[in-house]
Image (cartoon, rainbow, N blue to C red; front, side, top):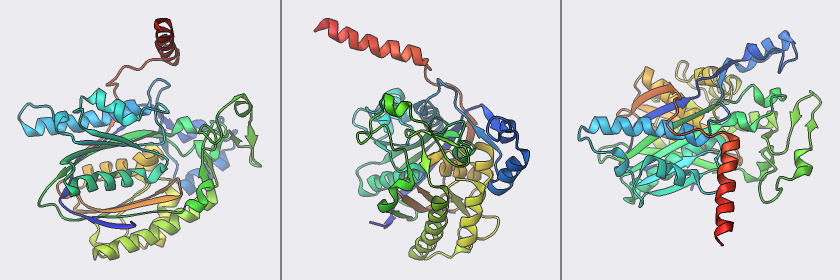
Length: 389
């Protein structure tokens, strides 16, 4: 498909949620950098490291997603003034993440139940695309509305990347934070066109991968006991994110710059006509490099979201958009993302009627059982079924 132009869809509201626990990079001088302050300061300068938000052991990705979705639905309900639940108006729910709570069922199905959405609401997960997934989810939700299959679609993006990284690996640990965002898409006959550009370079899938845990390489004691160290002393496990950093850097800057140029050309829009470029918040170095190669106007992009919250995976660009629109309303916004696959997703949106509710600290909206409680719960379900048979 590549390029797509869709009509009669607008982003009505957008909200972000991050865990309250903030970890400043300088507090990890000893634990990650072995007390080497010169190396730490070098990383801070190059990547613009600041702080990251880390979810507690009992806070899962689904819980963050639920909290973000509740904020959006509460806003829509209050704005309507009818007193009727906005949950009953949702025709489709798309949840994008690489941090799914369970192998199955889909997190979207569980979230549908928690939110009280109608049973005829289409629910699905979008996973395996990493940091480009939010734009793909926007494309799918917008397509459902554009086709007439839905009038309202709730798109929720979330990742708990801190669970995918090793505390003894500074290549990944220092970058990733946790967070979620929710966006309500709805049909609007007067909405301007939305443009999307997506693509995949599947031949390079091994440059960014979590090799173990799927059907190809199931987890067993052999893999659990396997610990790898690179020349820099970083520790790797095969069920964690394994990334070829320099190759991903080259891919990101190349594809984002090329994609922005192609997308704007297709839309007939000059660079200066775009009010803000929401670039994937991979790290400050990549944001700066993408902006330079793409020749973006100064002051129309930022790495502030990364500096505050870390790289929150596919939620990162949504959080950046959320932060920016709360500070300054914009009409034309370009989203540029790149991620696992290798994949990319870009979009040019009219956000003149989008209400950003900002980014708030997570407050539990669902019970948070401990690991021991979950194990006991699911064992009791299994034993109960066996006893009844």
